[in-house]
Image 1 (tube, rainbow, N blue to C red):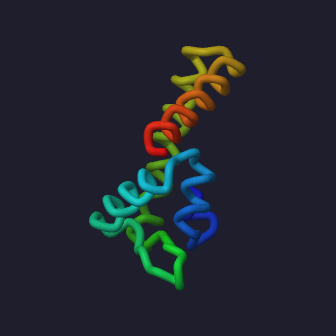
Image 2: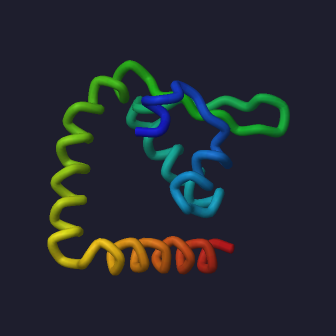
Length: 98
């Protein structure tokens, strides 16, 4: 959804935004690019990612799924517990990829 809003981002900034290690982000972007949902290019030392028209067309469905997932997640946990758990998962992911 971040790429839908900005159009194109530095892959490392996208990884930071999502709380992912750059290597994990690269793998996700590779998979999305294989499916034609994003494009990747280099700009000097920066890896850039941009959403494609095909990826943009999926956004309404993705937003519905995301809202359902978020609602189910919040039903399971109090909001402060859900935030804490999310931060711990992101930290664990960074340490594993680190």
